[in-house]
Image (cartoon, rainbow, N blue to C red; front, side, top):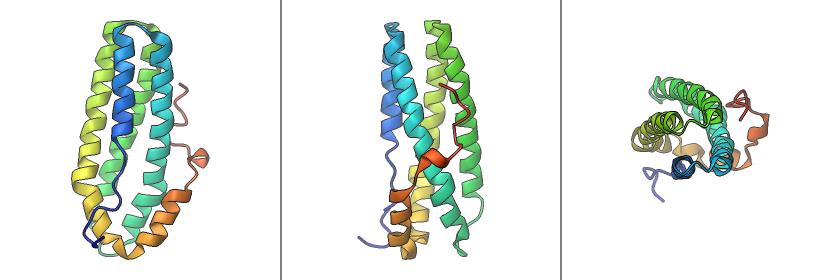
Length: 157
């Protein structure tokens, strides 16, 4: 693998797929399945955000030649998504299909926009900048324990 390849690629499609399945369950008013899928998505997303904010972003920020700013914007987007998820956890309990679907659509759009920014801009740049620490960082990412993180932990879903 060359040093310019994106070795930090994430699996964003998992969260998008779970959200899409949740939407399908709401469309047929299968609330038990919708609740289960939403909770599963939140669990995976919590791990993902914590991994980025506690391992990947700090490693990037510590690189002396890394442009500053991208991680701040990505953190702000994470905070916005967390707020939307916390709102969604309350909205889904209303069992108002139209309202829940509207909120799910908004959440999905925000997540996709964020994922595209990471995949198209940040991760390729970070992969290049952090290539010298690839082995060490890959090990940290693999061994990371999100259960000790507070990201999305406030969202009781």
